[in-house]
Structures are given as structure tokens and as C-alpha cells.
Image (cartoon, rainbow, N blue to C red):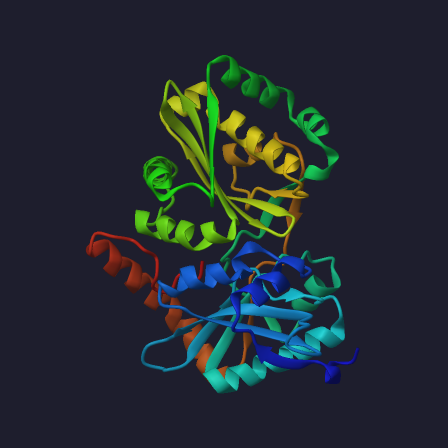
Length: 360
């Protein structure tokens, strides 16, 4: 198939788009339709751009989030964990690049930022390491740890480091149990569960020094993803108290551990060890092939994740494509200051929804 055989189109149906995403190479949950709707509440406009021989047969595409930059009147576009599809094929890459440039003229896009799950040693990743692409500030984690779930529960347990197996057993002996919720959980049940998730997650954020969004954000995420069955929430309990939590997305054969935290009591009980192990075993039994730990921090968190087996994966990281040179240059100079001003404004107002220049 030549690049001339591929035409560009915008996908406007959620079911059609999600079916493409889940079957595409390099797919990831931030390319799902619902993630675009989540980010829309932060001021981004989602556009689902695809190429293929027909609208019914896309071979590559990206959910692009567009944000108008004040004063200049142009847009910044970001494809979270995209583009996806047959991007190892140079003809497909060329056709999609052309589609991006056409979209850029139509929507007045100065810069496109991407960060696909492409390793540098793949044809796709290698192509992104050279012009016209350039390195950009990190948005999504450039490294992660993934576990092959197809080996089965027995092999997964055997791959745990000795200390991790001991801590899993300690939590079980200490009376820690696991509670699970999914898209079928009734509203009157999931409401209090999300409140406890927010409580634990904010406590963890304060202790670890990262920013947790306001509770309404995670509630919105759940309300959008739950009807599709692509989200799960689990807790470790001890004496009826929720002491650790994990929030997962699923996309195709992948389960992704996106948010998590624990209380001081949960840490003492090693509840997070049992919680993560149980999640991996649950997804393996449910037929998922990959468990993605969604990023690797330094120090203790990295060592904690390494103890559950799997392999470390490195992606090419964020890359920028300038579609309008002079405006792109102005954005590179002005956007960091604009983002800082937005964050300071939010903090002065007593909230931090990170919706200003935040690309996540």
C-alpha cells in the first residue's frame, strides 16, 4: 500500500475510534476516546485524526488535544502516547505527517507534540530521533516496567524477588484483604470508594512531593471510563479500613497501573505489596497479556516495582514537530512562563487542577 492510497479523515464516533485504538500497534489508554473527553474539561479540544484506505479501515492515527495559546491565537497540539498504528512503515509515517500538516493549516497549529510508546530501536522510534522531529520536555513517563502476564500465575509469583514474596505473605498473614471495583459497581458504592481513593492518594502525594488533582478530576475519569469497562479500582483493607489503593486503566490486552497510594498503616502492613501482586494475578486470570507499571521513579519506588519482575522499557520520549516556524519559536519561549503563571494563579485560588499549560 503506497502513501497515495491513504487518505486522512477525522473520526467522530467513539466506538469506531476505540476499536481502532485497541487493535493498533503502539496503542495506549491515553489515545482512547474517553481520555480526550477527560482533558476537554481542562480546556483542551480533542481531534481524532486517522489515515487509511477508507474511514472504516484506519491504519494509523492520533487523538490530538488542541489548546489555543492566548495572544498569538495559534494552537499547540499534543498526542498523548500517540500517534499509533502501522508507524514502522515509512509510507504510513509519510502519509500521516502530511495529514498533520494539512490539519495544522486548517486548525492553525504551530507545534505538534507526541510521545508514543515507541522504543528507540524500532523503525518508528528511530525515525522520531531525527529531523524534522526534535526533543521536547517530558510529558508522559519515558521509561516504564512491563510484566508479561501470559506466563501464568505460578510463573509470575516465582518471578517476584524473595523479599517481595515475603512481604506479600506477611500482609496476608496480617489480615490484609483485597477489595475490587469496576465499571459495573453501583454509584452508591463507587462514590464512597472514590472518596477513599482521593483521601489515600492525596496523603501519598503530600508525603512523596507530587501534585494530586482535585477529587472531581478522578471522579470525572471514572464516570467516563466506567461505562466502557476500561477502568478498575482496588483497595487493601485491614480491620475494615482502606489502607492502600490502585487505579487501573485497560486498553486492548494491556492493564495499566496509573495511580496508587497508601497510608502509614498500609506501609507498616506491607499492604501495597499484596495489592499490586493481587492486581497482577487478577489481570492474568482475566486474560490480559501485559501489566504496565506506568513509569519508573528513582530510589525506593523504582526498587519496589523492580521486585515484581518484568522488564524495563525505554521510549523515545516527547518529540516536537514545528508546523509554523515563527509561532513555534515564540511558543518555546513563552509557554514555560505561561504555564508557571497558570500554576501560580491556581495555587493562589486555593486549588491545583493543572489545566493551564499542563499536557498530561
